[in-house]
Length: 405
Image 1 (cartoon, one colour):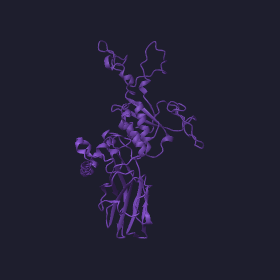
Image 2 (cartoon, rainbow, N blue to C red; image 1 turned 90 degrees about the vertical axis):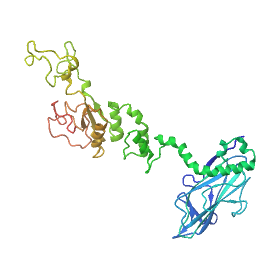
Image 3 (cartoon, one colour; image 1 turned 120 degrees about the vertical axis):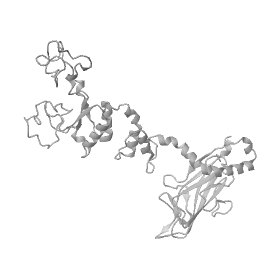
Image 4 (cartoon, rainbow, N blue to C red; image 1 turned 60 degrees about the vertical axis):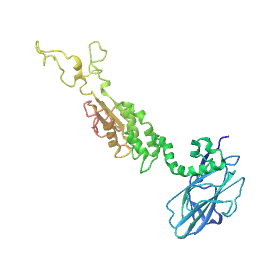
């Protein structure tokens, strides 16, 4: 039957549920075990006992105990003891069959024979000016050592196998930290698991690796979710959908983005569109032959090839308009953030106009109810200029984006 192996921690969420403190000279506060303090003076000695611990219904080969401290052992000492037996409780004092670890040893082998349960004892000493503070205690069982990588012949004799495992445990205790870092390496590439903090912030390192900007105002959960979505978002860069998502996560606005060129087309004879309604005049002079202007006998030609119809779309080509509701501009910097996002994420060859949708209706400019014309809140002062309908702007040539760029 294979040897059961594993480990567990005694500090669970800043609580020590298995620790008792005989004599009450030890206190467990803030997730730390230390000598009790009364006024400005600490106790000079105290003991604690943790257990019983049981991981199987048969005797367990308890292997190793390791502890971490908060701070250094200045003017104080710590010593651990272990007791393994078929059933508890252990002696009240740390005498045989308790096994003592070297004084101030924070990583040591359990020298007890296999037992059904394990107890861990601790003795803290100080000069009254301070105390050692134990932050965590880990227990390894099953003796999962480097001996498993050696031929079985090395484990045939029980005494020799026991000595070999303890001997290899010395080197394993040194290398286990490196092994743990290697085992945890995949965490560094997972947005939901990469550690935060400084230094180093692995979450920030991962975002830099992906050239994805983490906004300092995001909550940690939002930063992780947005970073995890980075690859999906990159597929939409330079598109209307992508710009909307970038504006949502960085500026918190639900933008309306339109491309005027999508509605523009050349008017032709037989087309059902009416001149002046579904069509428009060219914004600039046409190339080639224009009657009464550039038409010269034997020296004129019609616009052909790649330039065909280019003048008709000169004022709308590679341009788009972004509209945001004024109610979503929750701070004085939101509009600047919107511009920064647009400047960073728009296709390089394009230009844009930014328009704030306010509670006003301007015919020909801001006139689609529920889209770019919104009702004012109760008590909002009515517009005082224009022709009486909202702000009364009737001219389609009025600047459609007075706050544009």
